Image 1 (spheres, rainbow, N blue to C red):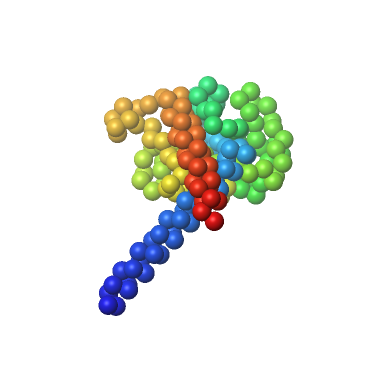
Image 2: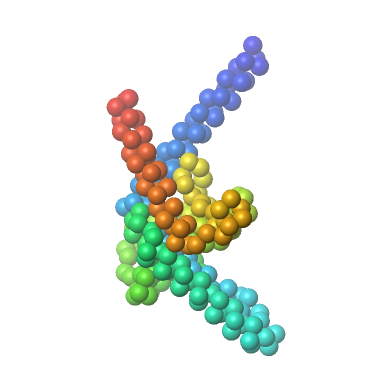
Length: 198
């Protein structure tokens, strides 16, 4: 009998946790739809500085150029392929300002024009990088403190299709937009059913 009660209690705790995760993901997708996706562009400043410190000027210049090309690709891909909602960019050196919602002079659009966004604006963050949970190269969506979101939110789109073929940022962002739109639609349906059942 005690074993049965223990199993049932684990079962109900699991159901409650799943419900909490669903509610949290629904709030996050709603915030994203109303607000902004803030995309972090990497600069590899520490690596470049270390190269310069060791008089590896040419390698430092190459790394700086590489990051500029990657960032231009990301901006172009967002402009063409991401259509779920509003987005803007910031450089990795401004991560603390974004975390503290000090947006002035930090955020910019696809034309590199600085944006003035109120600090109360709902937002999530994102970047092309490594997934924290799986260690895969991916486009990853995170919360306001740069913590990777969790299932059922569609928080990740891998850069490699089937683990072999590297996909373009355009393809990745188009697929992510579709997943976000689908999840948002399902979230609204879930919210509607929940209201009817009250």
